[in-house]
Length: 133
Image (cartoon, rainbow, N blue to C red; front, top):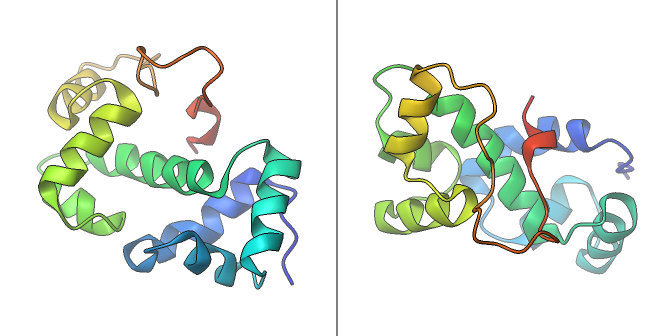
């Protein structure tokens, strides 16, 4: 069984599996944990739900891929396990408060402190800036 003390390690372990992660149960299986144990571990160790961890890993990878010039948004979606382009667009905007195109433009301009969550969310929501490698 893999223990979950390091969020960066979790990112490294989950990222290659993103295209095939369709549920939290799939993520738990990567760590060789039951769903209940994975839920407890993510809450106790990181103070996040399993879905927040999965969304954070997906967002981290999406942002890395958006840095690649000419990479289409649909390709980013496939790489992070979101095949539906419309859902991808809504999901990304919900996570960041920006469209993928707006976010990519900020990255191209070299903006260093891009906000990683939707600014309309409450201040108690998880911030994912610590997830970006």
